[in-house]
Length: 161
Figure 1 (cartoon, helix red, strand yellow):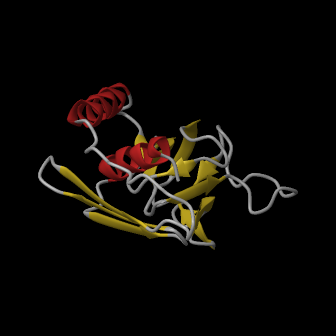
Figure 2 (spheres, one colour):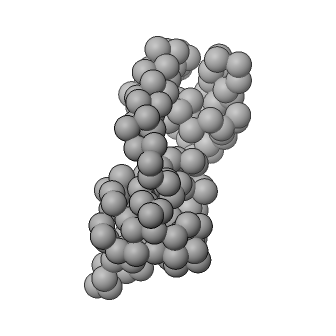
C-alpha cells in the first residue's frame, strides 16, 4: 500500500463520520481514529524478510478538506429543499441493477412507493436491497452505478407531490 492510498483512506474515513477504522492486510495494519475535528492514524507495517523497508510516516488529513465537503453538501440541500432524499443506510458500493443483465430498479420519472426496491448496496460481499421509504416520483439519481457510497449519502431525489 502506497502513501497516496493511505492518505485517500484517511480522507474517506474522515468524510464518512466513522469513529474508528481498522484495516489489516498481509503485510500492513492500519488503525484510523477520528474524533473532535482531529484525525489520528497509527500504521504498523511488517517488512518481508530479506528486504529492507523504510517506515511509512502518515500525517493527519487536513481539516479544510472536510469543511469544503460539508459546505458543498449544505448548498446542495438548499437547492433541492422541495424534494425528499433517499439516502444510503450503509457504506458500500451502489448498484442500480440486481445483476448486469437485468433492468435497473428505478429510473428518473418512475413512481416509487414505500418498500419498493430502488437499488442495491454491496457491503462486505453482501448485497443489501435499499427500499424507498417515501412515495413519489424520482426526479434525479445522484450516484453513478458501481461507485462507492457513504452512510447517509443521498442516492435519489423524490418529488413527493
